[in-house]
Image (cartoon, rainbow, N blue to C red; front, side, top):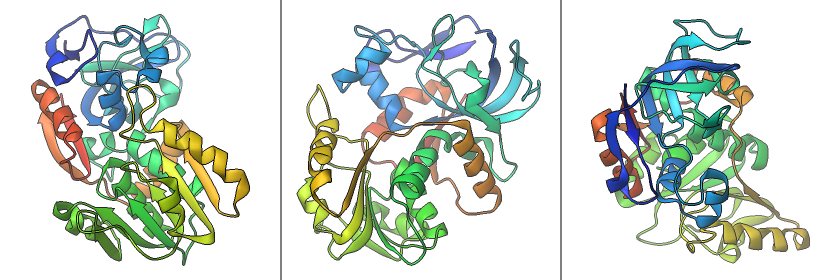
Amino acid sequence: MKAVVQHRYGGVEQLEVTDIAAPEAAAGEVLVRVRAAGIERGTVHLMTGLPLVGRAAFGLRRPRCPVPGRELAGVVTAVGEGVTRFAVGDEVMGVTAPVLKGGAGHGSLAELTRAVADGLVAKPAALSFAEAAAVPVSASTALQAVRDHGRVEAGQRVLVIGASGGVGSYAVQLATAFGAEVTGVSGPAKLELVRELGAVDVVDYTRGEPTGVFDVVLDLAGNRPVRRLRQLLTPTGTLVIVGGEGGGRWLGGIGRQVGLKLVAPFTHQRLVSMLAKENREDFQVLADLATQGAYRPAVERTFTLDESAKAIGHLQSGHARGKVVVLP
């Protein structure tokens, strides 16, 4: 089968589309014919090996999983021992695992991939394969930020920084679905998209910083000082910093989250840093919300498998509006 393969950390020039042996499903796993693979920030970090702290889990000198990509939607072609939730022919969405039983994991940028059954749910009929592949990592991150950490409620004012990105496009829609009044921050070329997603107000960060007071601030992009973000909160408001871009080679944006934890005990504001934990329960919630029409994946562009390097480069450039998807 064809797959994207990466043998060393670096840029998109390290990615090669080549023929490799097809994987087999081990116990507790399923084999999926990939109809679509979402590209998210984690794919970029695993490609570059940055920040360096992440290599402790994913390979010190080179990627333990040579096939990149995590988000997927496709059709089950085989089930491993002990799998009862799925059968051959089922349409699914979810994630691959970077490390699986028997050694290195297997990514979604391939014609076939193996995935743990507990990392998949049935694809909702309301979503195409391309849309479904754009959901698992990015939308579950947004769901956890909005619902679990932000505790967004109806009537609240919510600021989403990075509103046009993969996670931000979902955060705007989910916060709106929960009844909040959302202001989105993005670049000038993406303001109309943010409005279409449900934001009642938009801020072009190239022309100035957001102003006003908010019940919840979701920081999904950039590396703004915590002090500045706190000034945008009510006295008992909540700041949620999700992941982090920029920063140094060792910690990247994680360093800012460490500082956040040092300040949090000494204020009435809730200061939260989070790393998403993908799980089947949240995937099912998102599948149900899609069926109800609560959100729609903002898929900007699709690429072929041979164009995977171009797809990842497009996301890496910061020009992507919403999600980027590869169709093997």
